[in-house]
Image (cartoon, rainbow, N blue to C red; front, side):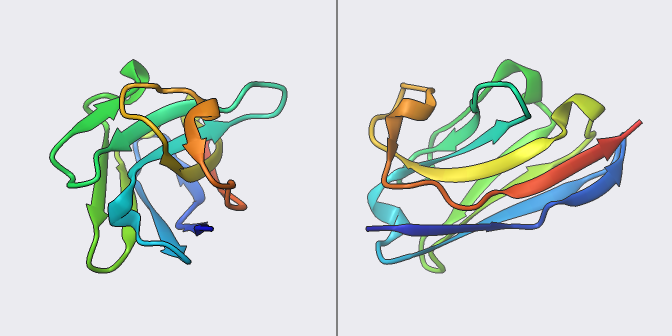
Amino acid sequence: QVQLVESGGGLVQAGGSLRLSCAASGRTLSSSAMGWFRQTPGKEREFVAAISRSGSLEHYVDSVKGRFTIFRDNDKNTMDLQMNSLKPEDTAVYYCAALRDWGIWRKENIFGSWGQGTQVTVSS
């Protein structure tokens, strides 16, 4: 069972940047496509970005394209999300997860359990 720990969240002004990290234990990240999701109170957890097992493929929700970049380091068993040009609507708790299938960008498609998440707050 993979255990995931997110870090790197914080408070930033609109237009600023943050880099989130996801560290895994119990299973190597290289065996799964990985993704980032986010959730705000009262809303469904939504897909943000994904990266394939090898790192050769990436996919982003339209609202973050051109601003967010997903990375992975299979040797270090980590995955990052570089977030630039942040907007107040990016405010959420961000979660990383292993994905079962490439191409299904829904929270139901994760493998294993969610981490505790990391809070990102973007002030206007």
